[in-house]
Image 1 (cartoon, rainbow, N blue to C red):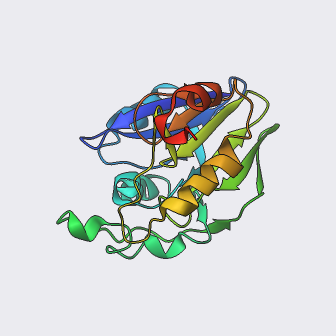
Image 2 (cartoon, rainbow, N blue to C red):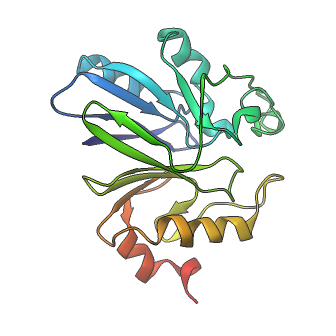
Length: 210
């Protein structure tokens, strides 16, 4: 499974194109501002988006959702059921505080914890990871030991919890119960910064020390 990462805009939001070597279908995971590099990759590789999946709906992860939806209006938009109201509420998605209020397209399918999303002959597990945002999710591809974890866990850090709908206790519970029980050699792709592994975070992340 190929997970291609793009750090978009001044926010340096990691957004992803997910695809396999034997198919031209792909997923877009998160839609940050200034998505030219991501869109060029799709075009250059003759890929065809079949899903847009959002790890959560803060402004830096939905900044180009409307534009991408206009390019592929029939491609479904998926988000956790606890995050759906963020898409069209600039206060909840934090865009109201940037001077660029965003009312994004509505989700066409709502996800919940434990969902299995099929992708050709592959499967991704959805894990609900609230704390940074109420409807945050991680997408786990067990077969290749890769996980997209949104803004829940970073390399040697954790997601912010100083937003109105954030909760540090929920975040830590999500990290420990939903991510740190993954294998040490599971590669994680956060919403910002470099990739890491569960094993590295278990040993080196100062926020996870007892």
